[in-house]
Image (cartoon, rainbow, N blue to C red):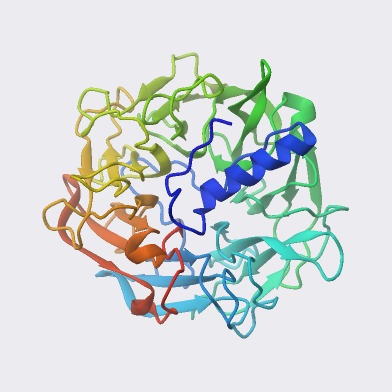
Length: 496
């Protein structure tokens, strides 16, 4: 109840709503509502610079993984694949790319209908060799003839990019039910090595695989934390970053908690350490990122709730909302969280029913001033006469925090942007801010999974000293990277 889908007329469903719908069904059976999707691993950019979060070939330029989770592979509908486009001094170069699916040589598994390979992604240097690795949470993968499902596939980075992959084989939870439902990376114990966190729907358990991981598929150890028992919030979506400015990465656990006769979205911060510990609850939602928007040295928690205001979504606002909970040395600041909607002064557009403002989020420094900015997808925004065409709003970080001052909006109707805003494009269904040309500023990538009746496409926007600009923007779809045509939801998930 209360869940709505930006694409009610477009089958198959987008990954976020498919997730939420599956969770609602689970709640009816088990009494615990689970909701979320994949989450990128991203800490706050260092002051004055953007951190390149995914450099799979180690050349100093940010790379981008683009999921096409409903694509047909080897004749199997919904098998899915990931296209990796590598960064250069001129930006992303579609001629420098790798296609990864379970039909690719060196990648475990076999393409099967409904695997949705790629709809859960994260990245990090898991084997400590200096190259970023890509993690695919293949949560729908059935394990042999058992009732278990879910695999964690690590595609290893190297000088020639992403080539071979390994499934994590041990240690694993006793039962797997969509293991990899959410995945994220970070140095959770502060030992200088990258660890992997993964959700498993067989239980409300947060699984942490201690790094470094071996290319044989073995982790040093696995720690399971029952977040529901500890906080009343299930582990459904995992987002990572450094909130308190210490050596250990913190984890934001997003899910739902009981509220009256139903459930509401809720998030809880776990402070990193030898064993991560809960440090307080914050606003719920279905998307989040952690970044230092006020440049005080502490990561701030930005959550997006695209839901409309209703009795069981009390934190939501008409058309969606973004909430900023500020970080501090002790974890969560005592400062009152800030809430931004399209009704906030300076934010382009208007807060209208069903806009889905906050559907997707990403953080990065778009103008090189040292403040993290936030890209917000409003995937169901009506543009002109086109319902659910979608827009992206870039909010600017500043000493006073995140506000609407200086905000910019982009759509396919923006001058200089290729294409045209059409009904059910869902432009902004995914957003990513990352430095792909090495200029110290984050560029914007926006996905529109509904473009061309669900084929999907992505748009690339350059950054300047004034932030993101439509000038020189370009777009491409699956054909530009050698992907198959047809229904694919190309750009439904971005990782970079």
